[in-house]
Length: 306
Image (cartoon, rainbow, N blue to C red):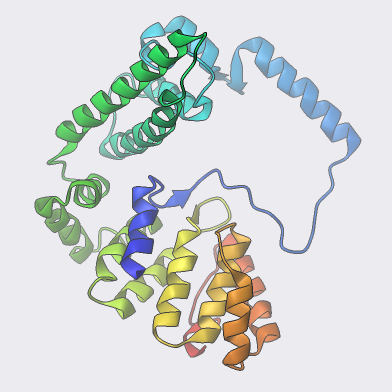
């Protein structure tokens, strides 16, 4: 069960950091002044009119106008807008060539687009059959590009791509390369790769996996938060070791980061185990604050004693 949860982190094409996750405050809501809102509207209008999505950045529409080849093999309708935009922008920004890490990112973008457009391709249109054809074109493009990039990166001497080929295709040579990176200390400054390492360790060494996840959390902040599935994994590990207080703590944090958690069930378990719920919830607030400030330390906070 633990391995399944951690593997899901990678297989959902999130390895492992969520750069665009909206952070909801735990206790305090910040208001925005009327003037700021009006100013933002005018700024947005100016950006749209200039053909830019951001200051100095081309809009997707402008990229497609200037370089139709980046867009023409994707579905032309409004489905999968976000996923399609990610691919178009990546193609535009790396037209002269991509690094190993950029190829890895592109593989994940193609996976996300394929999942979306495959669902859309299953919708039948009686009057607009051309939409079905357009979506099927996008699906075939995604399959082609995943296959092409897969072959291109199969033997890449890179930890991201090595883990990708192990997790997707059970490529044992890729796993061996990844573990060599780990033994050489090449993963320990990157929370993405540490979570990937934990997903391998958890099948044979739960304590080692927990320590690796703690190391990953020590290297994140509000802008580079790991997937909420990591907190669910820590909660599951705690339950497997009959550490109900720690399980409740990590479930609280997972819920804050919008993971699907049955907190009523966790609360029942905590009450049955005579856990000091107020104390653990207070600690959860501190963990969240430390994570977002880049100051997390499981041992400083005393989590290992729960």
